[in-house]
Amino acid sequence: MRRKSGFDPYLALIVAVAQMVIARGASWGQAGWREPLDGRAFALLAVGPVMVLLHRRFPLLTTIGALAACDAFLVAGYAYGPTFISPSVLLFLLVVRGRRTMAWSMAGLTLLSFIGYAWTTGTRDFFHSGAIITAVMLLMVVAELVRIVNERRLERERTAEEEARRQASEERLTMAQELHDVLAHNISLIHVQASTALHLIDANPEQARTALATIKTASKEVLGEMRSVLNVLREGAPRSPTAGLDRLDELVERSGQRVTLERDGARPLPPQVERAAYRIVQESLTNAGRHAPGADVRVRLEYGQDELVIRVTDTGATSPAPLSDEGSGNGIPGMRERASALGGTLVAGPSGAGFQVEARLPLPEESS
Image (cartoon, rainbow, N blue to C red):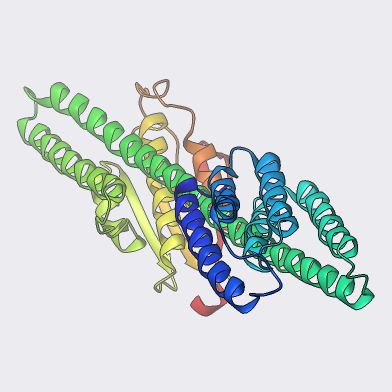
């Protein structure tokens, strides 16, 4: 991931101003033994900032150009100091922008040119050469450290983005599962009650009226739960309370079946456990209504110290099951996925003449 080039003109301007100001001071301080500044000197000083401006597109050529302008400035006899800025900045940029091989190669060429100039002018001092090597190496080490810091920062940002995407994906999966459970239960209930109402509307109007009232309640419920799930897609929308075990009585009442609800040691549980338990009971009642109409259903919740045990058992169909072939086939796998997501298990299968679903959901220590 590379940085945007919007800063390059400002960096070129900073380098230009710094070189001009330092050139004035260095020329004044070195008057008498270095050449005064003239038009050619200012032209050479302008090469470096132009190379900085074009560096992103032509990294190697601009670095060579800045180094050549620096050498020409020194060979012409102008003051030491100002033209060192451009090559240093470009070497630094090569490292930071990930062109490390090119950067270290150009650093070696820079050392050779500077030490070669010193020796050709009679400055054959090993201390002076060591100072040049130290300065260039220090520049490269600092650039490498900055590069490492930038790469680690970018890696943290990428990790955070990936984690955000993963959480968003899990949230979408959860919403899809919630919508499936809500729709599967309530639409099946509406279908059953509508069939009952149509069958009894002439012979038993009161029972038909009860079925229609159940349809009204179920449709209102499904609309409310769908709105609660879909609200999370709107930015800043508050998350509505999700279904919990405190609503089991309402769920049983609306099911239109003969259901016995038993609770052993009931107590508040973590929201994720309550939501999963509610959906498992809901899906089990939906399956019982679809595949075993007329059956007696027993729902038992055992609140243990380390786990919540859910058993939903029916006695078997007493009449034909008109909806048995209309399911999606995702009911039991969906319940099993909910249990597994919490580290629990779910077993479903025949039990005598009927069917039983048994789920075991582990409870966190703090809830015990």
